[in-house]
Image (cartoon, rainbow, N blue to C red; front, top):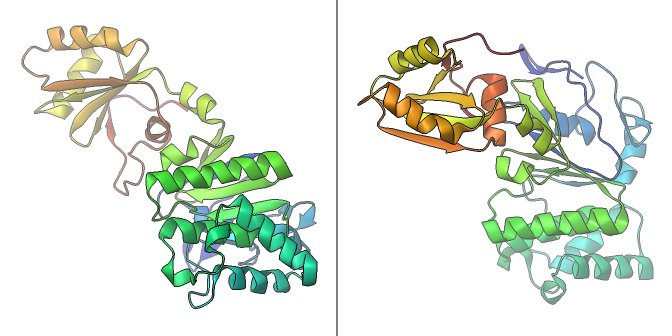
Length: 310
């Protein structure tokens, strides 16, 4: 799929498939294309170029059929603040043709699942951010969708509330077989998904499980603080034949058994290493490896001493 906003190419031929029953994360910095892809999949924007199907329905010609089988929770709040929690859910249910005992039963069911039964009679405007997000999820689940689409579900939530959201997503996938596709700019959150698609500037730069993606990084991440990063990076490459990067004023390289390189680097360049850090590969390292810059950094790619791997 491709999509333009005027002259700006927001999605550049993105190929994608989400398996039934998985939790799938669309990850990317602001402007990466994930929100555009979310709008397309949720039928909020027309498909301009390419082809796609959602739950077996053609995205271009069967949008109404798709809407009956998906649940959507937007990044921006969609709750009526002047209504109670239960009133919000009743109105949502009527939009999907639910009424009477069936509607009442479904409302009670999702309130219980999301742990907000005791707040059913409270006005939405009195709820905390975490409780509002639970009610948003309850709305999205009310009609028993086969696919749940979530745009930045953890926005403005504290770590405890964020953990609660992920517990609910895991439960609904396990208990009801719901497929979950979500967007996020939080790499630690994406690490909990079954598979991840990393989008950058409209392109798909990585697609796999979190562990498989991290395994593609060429070893441990080594970061060296120094007063002249460009010179030290060049000297490390010349002496050890290792590719290096200058990133945020530091030297960065990837090497298996990174801890064994601490003493070698300090001894090889006495007085030039202010500090050195070694860590196991993270999704941040995957993004740096694929895009040549830090996640969320809109600046030019890092200076490198050797051409990047294909």
